Length: 328
Image (cartoon, rainbow, N blue to C red; front, side, top):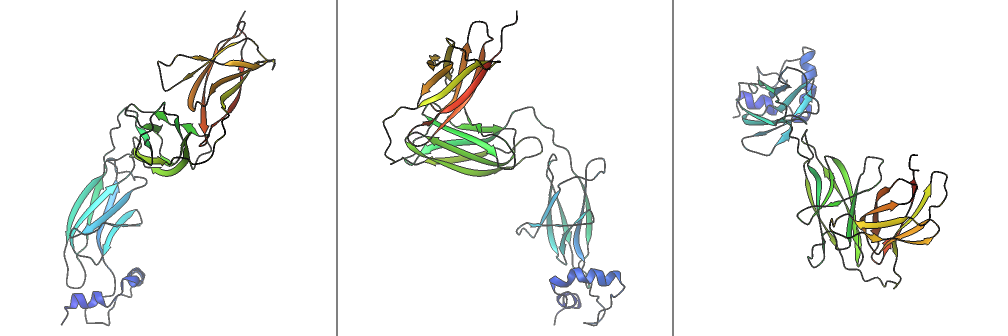
């Protein structure tokens, strides 16, 4: 024979408990089932969240578990979080928000005669003390299908962009441990594209979270499969640079060099002038390349240009560089 408490609670399906709250507000709290219990559904645990000054906190997440079970989300109702309806047992609550330390709390919810005996707890979140370190958004490992790692200087390249932002792709830069750093101090949905001559290109998407101070670094591995595409024997130029003055006139005879940015000790190589003011820099050289221009009567200029490739050749980057006159 079920107790009066369990009988009254079982008489009300879970899907109807919210409706019961409205009945309670209208004064319709009588119960025709089992005697003295009413039909209202009672919340188990109410959690009130604020900052140390008692102010509301944005983007709060509150979840709970009972008796060591799986965590479930608490319900945000009128600036309070309701954790469970007519549930009893040992409650564990976890409260988090961007920019604040995650906090936990516990409560023991007991059964009463008709309903659980509800409790309410207040939690004041403490702000995180942010460090001044620069945190990588994504650390990328590139390898072929045989497990060979492609570090900087191997001809591999990688670039990233934010899927929800109008931005040009940015190069991933070599990390000291052989990986590639794609962005720093950015969070959100990342799109990463990578490739290498002799391998098919690939891409992936990864969502980089934020802890309120810094991004939470995502470690990603991408596999570049060995290409079987028949390639032509032609050698492609990495950069075609047109150098002009502010009047648009070609600057001929300039000293133009290029340098692989990922190798500090790399000796700058000369670019050659293929036509008036048109300089060709590098052959089948991908990733970030520094191009420096020196010319009499003009100010020196340096530009970093990112070059990608398909499985056979580099994809030539064409740029125009305008040199300013030297002041009199």
